Length: 160
Image (cartoon, rainbow, N blue to C red; front, side, top):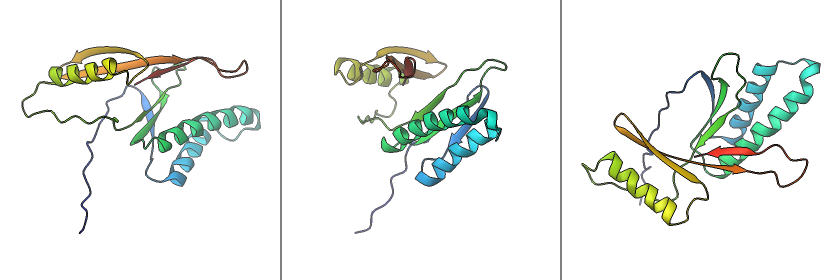
């Protein structure tokens, strides 16, 4: 019996500014991509060695979480608003729950079921916010992860 590959849904993003996409299909290629990005953004100057190391560590940590969680894609912001430092990255994952809407089901109805399932079932420990854009519906969740240790990095906003 030969298996056939299931085509995954493709997401395309229209993002403001400039972004770096990290390929997640191969672990070593992904790590090289992150190192290339850090080198591109900070150069090779000795004065920036500490910053390069910290940025590499943080991005590689995020990369490991993306790969370990079977992420589909990871994007890192290079510049969103000119002259405003706003570090950001996001990873796309397949949801743990499956939904197959019937043909003709509106986006609002599908998103309503998803929102109810996630919030009522305790599947997320976050605040959910739902809104519509043109014909699409969006459910955004967010939570703040507070430092567990005194020397840990500042609180982290996690948006899904």
